[in-house]
Length: 336
Ligand code: ES4
Ligand code: ZN
Figure: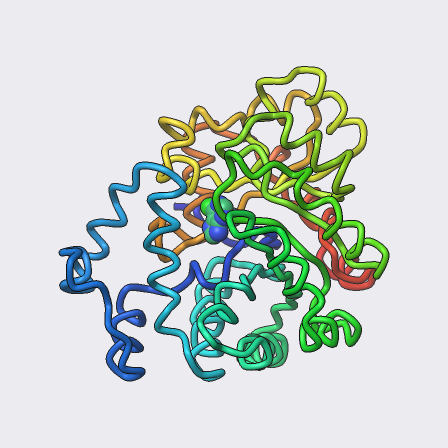
């Protein structure tokens, strides 16, 4: 329809995409075979790509998803595996009308399996450079730290020589915080964020996905992040809604993810209307598209179906996304 075309053509920025979450079941099985990685034999979901796809349709929570997510990425071994994964994402990004992408990855999930950080980064960077040249899509990389692991491990991962080199060279722009949320409060990561801030890195954190609104305010106050990933629980705290609107903090909202992981019952319960009415800035993103069954344009379409937004509202959402991006001002002007 013309509306689908309109949404497709909007110059979209993606700010919340886990590269490991772009691993399709097809590629997962191919790489498992090629790299000789044994998949769990005691879980029927791993009998075939089709069976696994079906299992993905009945996640019960964030942690239920994360269980499959960490097994899935165990098939990624060589730089070429990481490059192919990111390249596959960029193909979808191109057809969905993405112009600029800020991409998360989880260094600790690879180094803990004996994969060097430089291998991961090399593969992702190769895909990003090719996407810029061949597809005209600009991108940035963001290292996320895993909140379910002991805090000292995040600090030593941050201090890793290869990781530090990637920050200093500008290969990686910022840090995020992801994985299981409840019980892993922002406060635990104050020291990590203070170090990153001192180095001039951009800062974001997952907060208020499953966890309470206080994790959002604590991420702002204690970690001093400039944006919030998810943030949907914000809607339960009217005062915090006003603050986020006033301070122009951008939320990177992932509507399909929120439904699939049972954070909300349906798309209409994602507080899009609350955010629009209060002047809260947000972008719409795909999170882990291969696991949740939808890339960014699916998220835009589902939001449109649920909220029947006007052309003006869509244009203001897209503009906020460009303005909230971490790319150079010159790139933002090209996109506006
Ligand atoms: C994630 Cl949806 C989500 N939440 C928290 N951590 C994550 N890592 C990958 N996807
Ligand atoms: Zn996420």
